[in-house]
Length: 637
Image (cartoon, rainbow, N blue to C red):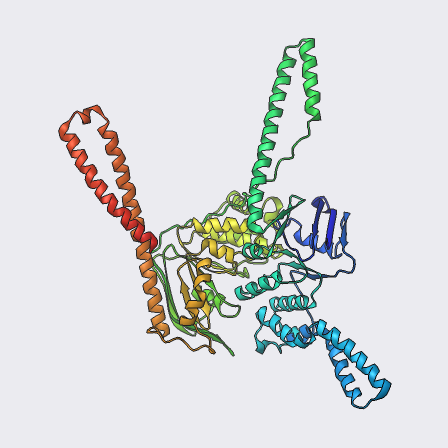
């Protein structure tokens, strides 16, 4: 055991965050802390590293072991370049290398016993240098930087010029290279693109030390974690397995706990009724029996009411009008910034009812595409056309559409002036803003709270085309699941940018990957994308080092045409499948009706009517046989 937390209790004022929680971490174990926003996950990490003191309880680290901590927000201030900053982590090894070079020079001019001493010193330092992988330091630093999404031309950038997200990636790189015995990572993937997240997963799986992570990315947790540590209503519980294992076990435990609680409540209600009845007899013997039952009831160890799955956030997108079938058509779209070409000649279209995810590395222009479609950013060239009766609802990841100086009530009432104060309060309450929370200024809200407010505004818009930029950022897992269900049940059209692979897998019917300045279309969810990514990238977006394979479709326009044809075929297949299923259902229902009719005396005694129904049933069965075969073909297509 490398880390032990025993009976940790922590409160802020009257709010008890953690009460008597315990867990431990084994060497090389990969564990994740989960819980809703505000449950105390970050607080627990800060207690472990000593930045916050528990009210009671102890944290024990195995002797000689080291901790490394990545906070959610990093303020790395340095005049060094990115590469120098990460290389400085290995300063002790670099000093060894400099000492080895110095000894080599000394040995050229030394002999006798002094040379022997230098050689012994050189061998000792050389052995330690090799043990610390000194000869591979530069490649190790380069590998980590590229893994975290930095390109070689960015290695020379000064830390002071970086964005907050870039500084967090630098801090994560420093931490990984320092290789502590226990890595404590608080939301390490917030500023990583999909490729970098996949790289970090593999890095952590092969990491020689223990890892304790706070993250809301369920796909990431499924791949990395072998233990889940849950904070729920102040209680800490450990579950073996990944996130899916935890979710399954949690559901079973919740069901068992609710049954036990309800059974006890029923028993208490029964005993109270019996006691009242016995007392009503007003006889000495019955009163004594009632008192005896009361004593037993008072001694009963009460089962605490289980915490409910949070269902108090209500999110339902309902379009006010139905759009035309063609929702969006984009042709020859290009955009670049000085010294930074993003994309050229993008072509794609979206039809009603599609849920389309846009993915790609950081800096490829995903958010820029959404801003162009919302006319917040001009395109360099190209056009886009919205279909008939299309109304856009936009969610931006920076929440710039929210007014920082307004209260929550003002934010809703100014956009929807016809709503009454009661209606506004009810809507805000459905997004977990109650009491005096509704009078908070937007600037005082957390990232997750601003996200919920923006979703509330979006829901009220009743738009039929939702354009969402990183909608799951800052949301806890329960809120993400509520949003997923709302999008799946939404009858309108959705175009969104996201790095949340689990979210994409649950909601996307198509994926557009922005890569090497062009778009690749995948007609499926994230699992389908993983199956096809290597194959389609070689055809549609080869890198400069990898010449495009010779195919009859070599131009971007031809690629787009083929993708549109594939999408049209897929839409036709889906429509034909639905029509076939509807026809089968209607015929099966009629078949049942005929059977019922033929059991009625007035029918089976009527020869002409029986003959008519039998002929209809025979024709019906013949058509059903044909439709079953057609359905099978369409399903397997």
